[in-house]
Image (cartoon, rainbow, N blue to C red; front, side, top):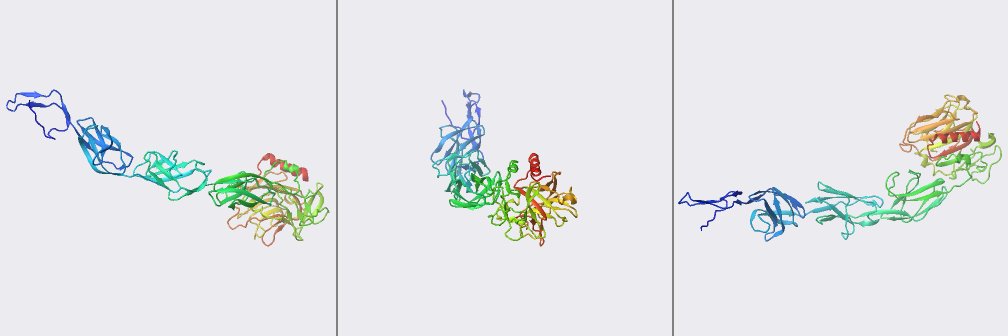
Length: 568
């Protein structure tokens, strides 16, 4: 029997080898081992960076064995189980933050270390959360932040300091940042909320540096009122100190937004009709989030309108002035005594729309009552030489019309000739202090110097639709004018006595750029510099709607209504 030891490194790593031994004294005598063997080696490649709890891929080279085993070493023991390593790479999870060695063993339990890398730093994973923006309860909440030393594969969020966690839905995690949306209603309304986010796998967490609010609003009463009255609104605000209240119809805001706080506010009721009172989180019209709504019916006031007109179904009536209705004409500006005498002064004209938007003339420049003057119906006679006109009693409702669509029916008859440069104005909406004719909506007629019946929607640029069919014969002819303004197309339209529609382009905007704001509604007048335009003739009916009537059937019905009532 013989034994000897071959020094380490004498045989290159690899195999299998077959060992042969010979007698050096008798070289011809050679013996061979029954089975082959291998020389094992393993070399760890480039070490990646490590973050606590995260996995990383370790490259290596093995010779003489098919499987080796990776393990972290803390200077005394392996940390965790050894990980089988075959081929050229294997993944291993990093331990908690600290400094370690990474060893490559030749077996699952043996002590032979094929290779080792020392002083490997495992960094602690960090998560930082950006402070969320205070958000309405009805909106989703955007969460964002950053991470370092290991990308999470899933995230959780908490608003109670980690007592409970909710999985973040479909988070975006890449390039050191993360983001996700928390669905609306997931967090109750409140103040001083702290957002915490954690890595679902490692438990590493971070909290936003500042708190945020989830806010909501609710109505606690169903307000009631009539046009122009003060309406008490009760509400509850949670998580927000100031919100904004506005009257709406459909998607249209009919008034400016009013700031509210506390639990009670008072607002002025708009025109009669059905509305929605809405609470928003922004003061700017058309922006922000709608927090709460309540349906409100503003009840009508004044004489009843003509049922034939109402039956046409034109939406959003603003003011309906009908001189044939004996309950609308008053001899005084305070509306206490009806005027019933032919030639009597009419200082008060009641609105029949239900909104209570009455007209009066406290001064001496009032028109007179003309009994049975048109189709056996009464009218108002205006004198240009006497500068007669009627105007609104209260103006709070007029400004809201300035940027919106309009439809008007105006029935009139002029009795003297008027030049186109100084037409007879039956009605206008404008600014009482305006220095010229800009920024007005009006219906007028002229019979000389380019005669026409005209509907105008003037802004910074004049725009008017003119029907020239009648020419000079417009004098003493009953004029049934349907005037319309389409804010979407910036077009003003006019239809006179059933003639073809005539349109013209006007230019917006309609309430800025130095233009005076609407504050006046006139019969028989339009401000135009130092010499206003007046009316010389009869005004029988003026109806105004805050809508662009584009239904052919209703347009036809409106024209037929005027002809049936007032004649041809």
